[in-house]
Image (cartoon, rainbow, N blue to C red; front, top):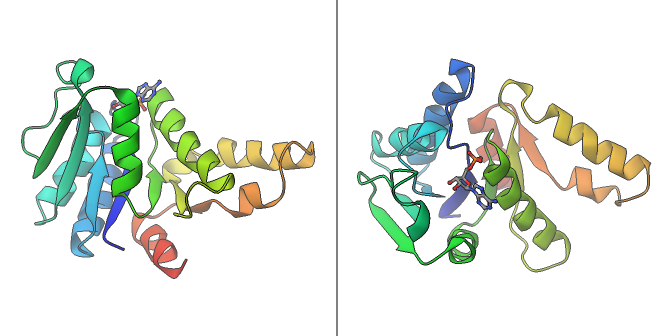
Amino acid sequence: MKAITVFCGSREGSDPVYMREAYQLGKAMAERELTLVYGGAGIGCMRAMADGVLDHGGKVIGVMPEKLANRERSYRRLTDLRIVADMPTRKKVMMQEGDAFIAFPGGLGTLEEWFEVYSWAKIGYHDKPCCLLNINGYYDSLLALFGHMIEADFAPEDYLSGIVHDTDSKRLIDKIHQR
Ligand code: AMP
């Protein structure tokens, strides 16, 4: 495995743990020589994660749609900043470049992008691990929702068991390697 795509909040979150853990995830990736692929923003947890990689000698590919480049302050510090035409192109590149996908805590954009890759895995478009980094219990309610979906028979059991998740970034990377 060479690269992991991480979907991640463009905000900092209310608790300093999110910025701290975003940086730690980046650091852990650099230490294991894994390239980070992300949305390319120079704000919020997205920036902290990129800093964690770059401060420890790692590589980062940022993929930013033209329209958002100013608003999200595309991060000029990146090894490889790609300004692309639109959001579908961004998602396509992020899906191609990563060998696994992680959702770090984030908002609508993070969830929308992660759900697309996970639902595409479930219908057989790819076979790359789809993972949640459950910092501070942020994704507890999402995991519970999957349990509810299965209980109500709107999804098969492997929709929950198929998600690789952990509360610690190093352990999560280990689990991805074991897949
Ligand atoms: P957020 O998790 O909402 O902070 O957003 C994280 C990233 O996802 C940002 O770079 C947003 O530009 C992007 N994003 C926001 N909304 C969407 C959306 N509807 N579809 C895809 N990406 C989005």
